[in-house]
Amino acid sequence: MPETPAKLTVHDLACARGERTLFTGLDFELNVGQLLLVRGGNGRGKTSLLRLLCGLSSPLDGEVRWRGDPIRRTRDVYHREMTYVGHVNGVKDDLTPLENLRMAAAIADRPLDEAHALETLKRMGLERCLDLPARVLSFGQRRRVALSGLVVAGALLWILDEPLTGLDVHGVALVETLLCQHVAQGGMVVMTTHQPLALDGVDIVPLMVGELSAAPGGQ
Amino acid sequence: MTALATHYDPTRENDSFSPLRFLWTVIRRDMLLAARRRGDWLTSQFFFVMVVSMFPLGIGPEPEVLRMVGPGVVWVAALLASLLSLPRLFAEDYRDGSLEQMLLSPEPTVLVTLGKALAHWCIYGIPLLLITPLLGVQFSLPAEAIGVLVISLLIGTPILSLLGSIGAALTLGLRGGGVLLTLLILPLYVPALIFGAGAVDGALSGIGYSAHLSLLAAFLVLTLMVAPWVAASALKVSIE
View (cartoon, each protein chain N blue to C red):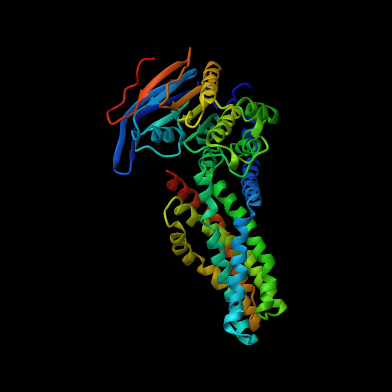
């Protein structure tokens, strides 16, 4: 496989939900060390865009490319390098946090470093919940389990749909640190949020999604 | 923090066992989750036992009549019991988002649907096989016929799980999906029912049962080849 530089490109992307067209002609490019911040009102298609970028749904028109190839064709390579945390956490109620991470790693076909996983869970403030099934955890705590999985997976591209929902002040600060570190390490992030973010020194690419043809802003 | 994983890992790329390993991961996962939640799957086993046991009570104790209806009753009850459990096949994982994560796995989605159908068979089908000899006695079936009944279910119940996974994937996220699933899938169960119950009838009447069992096995092979792919496509449509 040729070693093309990691880059997420979107060409002339259009998306429709049912009869309604959410956006058309969306173009952008995301390079290593950048964070794409998707903004837009409720129901404007932020989540739909993120699902298109993951390959969970297919666009009405246009193409998403990873390292220059359409993600349809290089699905396995792309999915190995990408982690998605959606609206729902993907955390199983009957498993403990560590078992959840173990399962997620097995499903994503990634090796799991147990010590690192445990350390990450503790870092995410779940020290006191390690023996509890996720059923008894609060929404914010389950969110933290999902975000721990994101860190442990160590993927290059993070696609995050409202990662801050349900998190307390410390949680938000923690996520901000994680994002900064990830981008500084040469990672890439695509995320949506309605909350203000304090990301110092991060190369943020803003993107408005809406009825009008969206134009990428300055970098 | 560890370094970011690189996309290209030659040891994994040439690993021809990786699909099998992933399949086993999916099966093990579903079985672990079922073990944590026993009440869920025991209900359909009890349903099977109850339905089958109602017939001798309703029909009366004549051994001739019971022997005649027995194989059909056990088979129909097995179909209904599998339909009772199928709506949960993908629904739980869909609700908590782990189904999305499974579709985002680098491994093909068809392994997810195949693995989940096989896990469903292990959880719902195998216990059914174990109780059946006891239920056969209720219908005063001779030992040979009970043996054929168990073998026919052994070949037949994987068909029910595999075909059922198509229906479960198609009706995922729909309101009243359970009823729709029944209407969609029951007609597809008909060949399994005919050959399965027919094998036991053959054993009872002395015509022989091997033809029926062979056809049932052929149907299983066909289902095994087709159903996971259809279910995977249906799943992608449902989750979009």
